[in-house]
Image 1: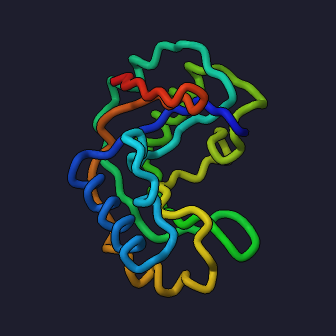
Image 2 (image 1 turned 180 degrees about the vertical axis):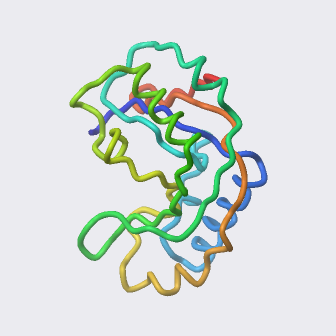
Length: 169
């Protein structure tokens, strides 16, 4: 997908700061990191849904469930080849899975969803780096801070085509 619309959960300020600290340690070591992406829209987030288009929808039921506790755990790798996406696994809970289901129910079923966000295939995570060279993985892992306990506090809509962020609650 080149242009996407996504619905994303944002972290509480302390958890966001901890993820940004991971980003910065990677960047300071000369490794791939999302710290290099300085757009104001670049925030640590948990993507619930991503698809090419998304009509306006009622997510009040989802927003009413927030905040929900979250634990960002071990590192994950996505992709193939000599470069990978490095992320922190978000430990799924009943509340988090209910929010994910609620977003997809409100948005309706479609085959156009990004596979990694579709119900039954979703791997909840917070991205730390894209295109990380595999030979730097041991160094990158040594730089990550401890697990992060916090909360998911708000929902936003990101439209890549217009570069617009809309806070939904």
